[in-house]
Each structure stands twice: as C-alpha cells, then as structure tokens.
Image 1 (cartoon, one colour):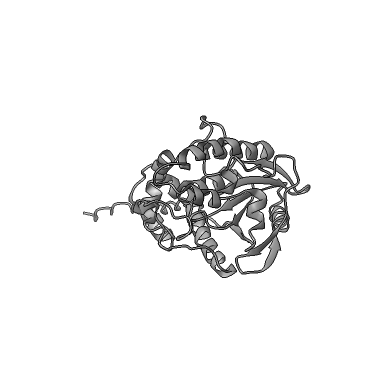
Image 2 (tube, helix red, strand yellow):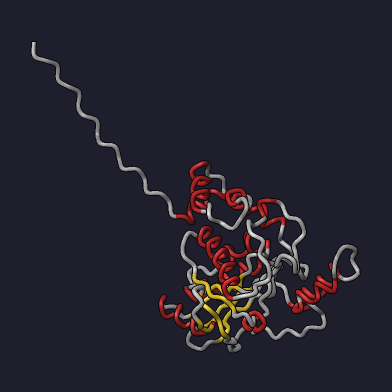
Length: 301
C-alpha cells in the first residue's frame, strides 16, 4: 500500500505582541494588571530615588486619597492664598508639637499677613535666571520659547517641583505632568520643600520615603543633583523624557511665582503671558489637575 500522507505542517506561530508603552504599563500596574507590570516598574525604577519604588507605584491611588488635603472646604475647587492661610494658621499656631515660628519662616506665602503677588491669568509671566542641569545659564522665558518652538506649540506648561515634598513625589508631580494633555511641559526645580535639618517632614512610611537625605542646597551642583533625582522619578512614571531646568541659587523664580512646594502655570509662547495659574500647593491637587487638563484640552481642540 502507498505510505500514509504526512499530516500538514502547523501554521507558523504569530509574532509575540509588542510590549505596551511605559505609560500603559504603569497604568496597568495601578489597576492591578499583574507580574509583568510589576517587573517593568522594577527594571525601570531600580535607580529611582524612592526607597521602595515598586510599592510606591502600586500604592499611588491610595496616596491620592490619603494625602488629598483640602483648603477652602471644596476639594473640587482650587484653593486661594487666603484659604490656605486660614487653614494653616489653625493647624500650626498654638498647637502642641507644632513649631509655628519655623512654619512662618518656611512657608511665608501661607501667612495671613502676606499679600500674594503670584502672576495671575493674563499678566506678563515674570522672567528670571535659571540653569540647565549641566550648569549652563539660561532664563525661564528663553526656555519656554525654545520648548514651544521645538514642539510647534503656542503654550507651554511650567511646573515647579521639589522632591522633598511627599505629595509631589508620590502623585502630584506625575499627575500634573500628565494633566498637561499634549502641551509641552517645562519643569523648574526649586529649593527644597522639606530639606533635612531645616523643615523635616514627620515620620513617613517606607513607600513614601526617598533613599537620600536631601539638605538645603548650598551649591548649584547640589541643586542639580536633587533635580536629577526628581527628573529620573518623573521619567520613570510618565514613560519618557521630561524637560527640566533649575531655579538660580537666589531663588528668584520661586519667589516670583510663589511656587513652594509646587505649583502649575501655563505660559503663552508668543506673548509671554500667563494663560493658566493654579492656586498654591500642596492642597486641592485633584482640582489643580482637573483645571490644568481642562485648559490644555481647550487650547488643543
């Protein structure tokens, strides 16, 4: 008899699916996608300044709930300087265990006696000296115009950052960056919100802690080092490069924008005018994120 016909060859296996982009991996992790996402975070954040980067990322939704501090009574609305001043005086003045004198020194913009001059919508954005992370002198508006031109953008979001602010490093920094919704973002690293030995935070759980003790910047190099850590953290969380410059050691930009510990603005490139201004941080973060996203969508639609 003739030999049996061999069975047909199986069809070739389809190529493996392309890995999702970093931002998708992080989003998957946040909603509990599993081991692959955790592995990505471990590989991508092993140089993270966070003490427990994987756990910190997993716990981000919880941090948003736990540290959603509200000034003014309505978390859906951004806060004003008088609302912050009213709340903080009650929280610090004549309260056992709180150093009101130190608070007044470290948060001068949050006092009832302070008259805010932070740039408002429609006003000319203050310029001031800045540095690249490599130490090259520049200015805020020069960098805004360069970033706008490089991206063909009419507006640039300007976000002021400080790694030692627990709210900024756990969720506010990345949430505000993502809220820019297609606008190019320029990060400006300023003086530390909670420098060790100057204005220490209370004891924090390990997922909120950072590996290094960051003290008051005594040189441009020290500020650049802290900014580099913050930049690495942001890049791991957003899944791409971020643009960052340093405020000068005279802290002119931080004072002009009343940016401590963090704050968000949008500047119109052609006119150098403020198109969006958030209220003072670190309060009402969700309202800041919602407001910035709504503005970005409105100018990009």
